[in-house]
Length: 197
Image (cartoon, rainbow, N blue to C red; front, side, top):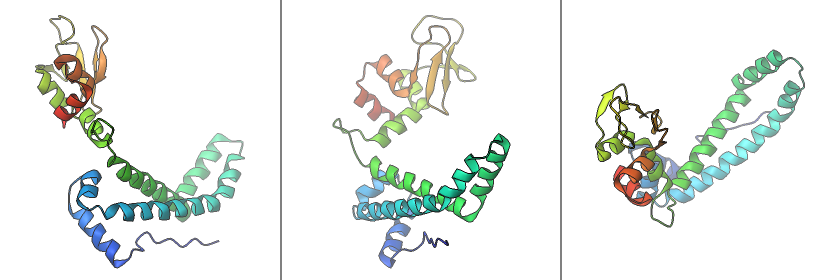
């Protein structure tokens, strides 16, 4: 069974909208705010990719079941890797990524009752350097700081900007940038998120 898939099968109007979408460097929530007509396009795109994904899964299901019947773990791993490299395996990965991205775009626009969107919360969690600046922590060496939660002479508070997390080896405090700003400034969750954005 040959599966024909062309992800670039868009109408002229959709292509123009997509071109405008990708010319900017805004996040999807800002783009949806600017181009509200993009919501219906994204919903259609999501439906289309979900249909493609289901079709590809039906095609690959017998092959995957046969691979998992293999008793040898190496053989299973090998054939799963081979399956990923063939056309249908790559198509499965493309469809899964597109479904995930499109769902994320549509979700980012939603805001909680407090008026803070999921994307704002994620950005705030990732903005650890800004959090350290807000609370006035002075850097010691290699991402180690003097802990603001207990008195110490040697820096034991470790901050990892890559994942936005902090941990103190002295008092065992841990948290993300939002929690850090909340506890040291007295801001509410919403105020802390807005300060970090």
